[in-house]
Image (cartoon, rainbow, N blue to C red; front, top):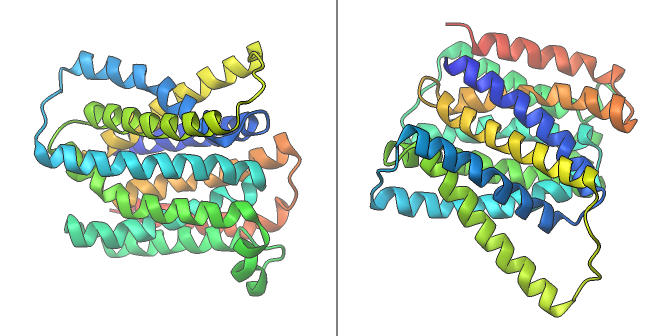
Length: 289
């Protein structure tokens, strides 16, 4: 079931990439991030009540509160990244998260991937790096892509934040539950984002315009995608190492590149196929037992 939940989480995140980009084209990053956290909260609360898994201790409170703060920052940066730059030059950078997570998980969780698993993680991360190139081998472009694209460096920062904090999710779950952690992170992040947004509104009162039906629908769909992605990710931790879950999730970035080409008219799909092949081999190595 671990692979099933990780794969399902990856699909939810792919849908979320597209929905966040569509929302970011019409709304500012802060209200989008706030809306997604608030929208997903009822889903988490429903699962929490259904599973009756509300026990927690001091360790859970400390770790979950830290995670809520970092999630608020990451949510804001994420929406800005996919809004400012093409999906093909932002989302694939998240494939570096498993590499960072693998080292952090080794230190704090003592999780050691098998040999093929380590090869798979490296191949997926390397393939993601090549995925940014304007030509098959153009290392100068690879190195300076975050400088050229405002969304790229933001997404690199998101990857670093998620890589460092992802193993902490597993610690918090061990002292609470998956649904409780999701509720705590969403509620805490929404509170912080709401405070920031309220402060900004006081200083610069906006001209309010009612949301269109299409925007409301996008927000609802995005909230459902967030809820499904996070819960499936947390449930996958029951059977898989943190680094493996992250690698399978980030493999979905390939589908994001395809969607970016078909939906948003982004270019360069054909020349990124070799990198896609490398990433596919990497995932196959990851699942080799």
